[in-house]
Picture 1 (cartoon, helix red, strand yellow):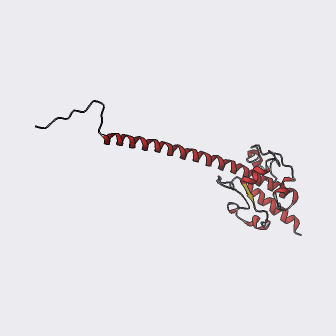
Picture 2 (cartoon, one colour):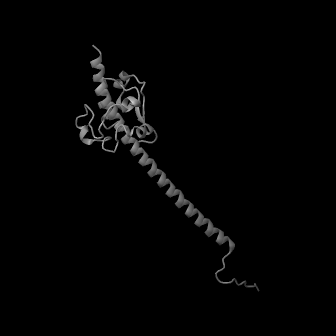
Picture 3 (tube, helix red, strand yellow):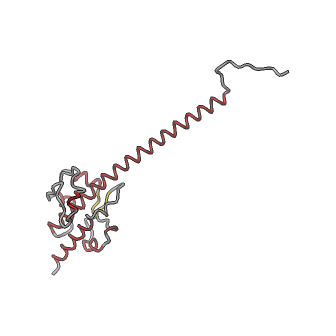
Length: 173
């Protein structure tokens, strides 16, 4: 006859405790990892959005500089010398002025220049003629630093290229 072993009620074999602990740890770890991925995704998305608007504003700023001075700027300091209202339309962009992308986002110029310099890179030593002939989707003389959403398909790059083309034509006889 087999002896019957009686366990006190509420007692589980040790392996069940390990199994429950492992499942709880995996669930908590998965929740934490999922929450972290959501946080990072939102953070990168917000940075990309801010970089997009900073880049669009900078393209409009340089466009205005080219329109006013007939040449490509040499430095951020040179850009800071010009006044540029935060909602001013760029020259030659016509209906794009209605969109006001890059201008109505609190960029007090030149007060926000350090912020823009952290987010946008300008190739000051670029050949202006090369910019005019570059397809707009390959334009990179002004580009965001870090993560970004596509900035070249809003029409501002084409406006800048037109301003440069006009400035080059006015300088050459």
